[in-house]
Amino acid sequence: MDIEQIRTYCLSKKGTTESFPFDAHTLVFKVAGKMYALCALERFPVAISLKCEPDYALELREKFPNAISGAYHMNKKHWNAVLPELLNPKTVQQLIDDSYRLVVTGLPKKTRDSLVEN
Image (cartoon, rainbow, N blue to C red):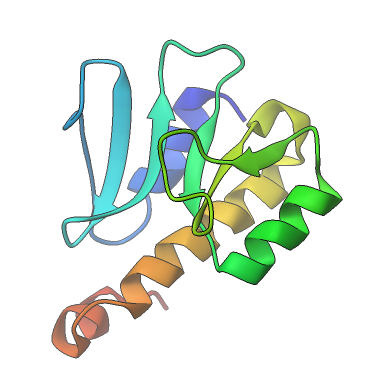
């Protein structure tokens, strides 16, 4: 997946917004004001940082050592850096889905209920 495919996929998630809160080169995707994905647009190859359950994050890093690592400038216990060009697009989409779902799960019930995807 390239950056435009990642962007399109993230924006298809209910309640997602995009912004550049840190600088002009770091695209951030949020749901209900909470980050679930960020991309450094000037980095090549493209990398996307995604939230992840701690044990699963470690499992993914072991399974895909060349494509997934602890996310730079993020809490490496909870965030992975993913190189989408080294993974199957369906895998990348699943990792985005997992990150989105993890953030939505932590939201207040009323907000969470409004975002549940069918």
